Image (cartoon, rainbow, N blue to C red; front, side):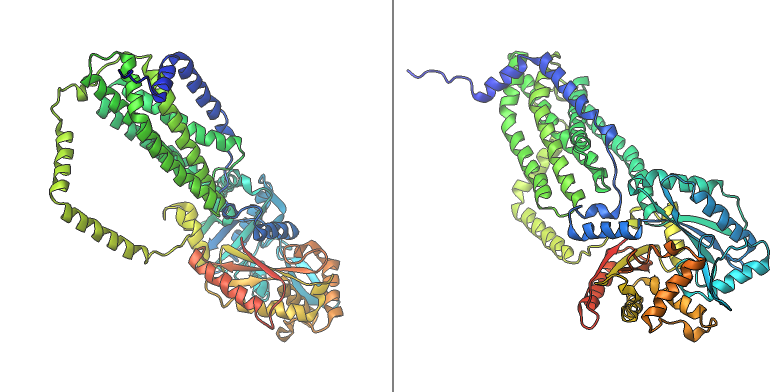
Length: 600
């Protein structure tokens, strides 16, 4: 005579869970609150550098060069005046000085890293040699003085397109910042400054630049999360209310949602992983996934209670979990594997960490669904929802689903044909996809940052920068005319690439200095062919100017030079072409030498 089968391991486990409801519910709440406590410490990283791993050789080198040349993603204030004299009007130039002085006082702005007409020097020849003096010496108060500055800029190619528009309708104030992770507060400070700036009729002020875009993204992420996540939560809560029409049927899935989000973002903060731009979509995805398991459990729970009113509440819960744990676990595991594979195979940190913390959230949802939900159900009285109180008559939603299923069964060939057609059309469309990205396109076209970027790129060489570092092998190698000629040739080549509005380097200063000591003759605007003369030009400059003026163009040993190309678009498809053509140029004889490029 056979013995009746004993309880399965699943039944034993869920009996253990339902036997300690208060303890497990309390532990679940404490665990959720503990994870959530880390969330306020979550940092954000919206820089373009975040998509490259910190130990990537290209980023390591670029970070080193940023320290050498004092470079960062800059903030840019554009002053635009479409009047007859452009920005070269006394009142407009005084505004440039006023803004420059106040930008220096903004926290996180490097006071020595500001470039504007109010900070830059003019280089002209004199009877004694070369004179280096401020453009604003004195600060212009008359139109004659403003016209003199305009003439000086027109005679100094370095600043045309990079600091002043070629048609003289705009000028820039470019500010390097000390800590790129503080872009949000820095951007807010810039916008407050613009708001408090005295208004001049006909003058437009815009804030843009890579640093400003990064800072604006901080605010944008907060605004999106503030709008989107509550909407998702409200919609899901409404669905739960309609589906179950009970307080516990609505509340318990939301607790699982909160625990899931807390687990993902709490561990993210505890692990020191920043919140990236792409992470903004993680909460909505987790909310949608976390609520699925409780819905399945509760639906089975209520259905089982209706079908077997003779069962005790404990038996209903244990049987519900015993019958649902395996399919739910298999579903969760496949989802977990999908996200964790993104972490293991991804090359970009934002994508990797998106996969990792989505996987952590998914497992937290599974844990709370398997333990917290049955424990919590033990603390409430079973109450059949109005939506499923009917005996066996399906409601209109059930009838609609049944009709759809019957149609699929009766028309299998039609269903398969339509599915195949959709797959073919989708596959054909996939081959026509274009992979592209532009940071500025993250914003709506009516956003101030978007309008500012477009307005500046229309009048200037560009608000996006490509830095090309050239290395010589010996100290003071940049005194060699051959190296300087090759840098100049490289600049001319880069200026032919798509989207590049212009380039600047130490060569532009050397040409201007050589011209100044040759009676300001235009034909003398060239690189000297004498190494000693080049060294003397730097010495002459230091006599009346500040030798640190070149710190963004050359290093202390005159061994490395930085070429900065201004690009008027941030689209990946365009800049990929620029980088590829530049690499081909640098690797082909006779141009080949040690050079590294990086977008800024």
